[in-house]
Each structure stands twice: as C-alpha cells, then as structure tokens.
Image 1 (cartoon, rainbow, N blue to C red):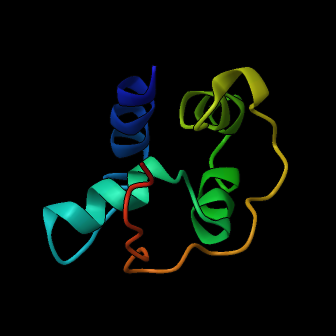
Image 2: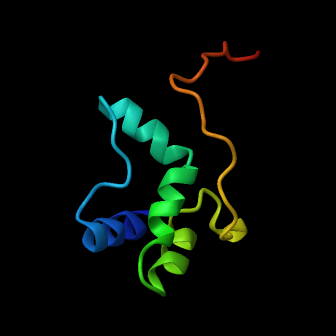
Length: 84
C-alpha cells in the first residue's frame, strides 16, 4: 500500500514526496514517514486524496490518522551498537 501512496502522490503533484542527497537519506526519510511539512502538502490536495494518502503512507496503517506528525526526526540517525 505504501508504494501505491508514493505513486499516487507523484501523480497528483508531479514531485517526489521524499528527496535526499543520496539513496540512504531517502530511505531513512521514507522509513520514518511523512514529516509535518509533508503532511501539510498532502492536506492541500483535493479530497479524497489526503485521506487516502495519510492511510497509504502511514508507518503503521492500522494506526493511521490525520494527526500531525511528531517532531522532525534527526539526520543522520545515531548509530547504536547492537545489544547482545
């Protein structure tokens, strides 16, 4: 469903939802879901697109809501040694 959301967003806006300086940065941003700015861009689309996109692009679709995203996520992520 996530891929459908990305393609739908691109078709409606003619721009990529997630961008970055390299592939890892784009993957990191996509893995953490839309930021507040990206959610606001989605909300500017005509109905019913925002509702569909919020559900399709949610990290956990079962918990998807139209609530704003939490604070922006830091980049680069802090590396943590795996616990054993």
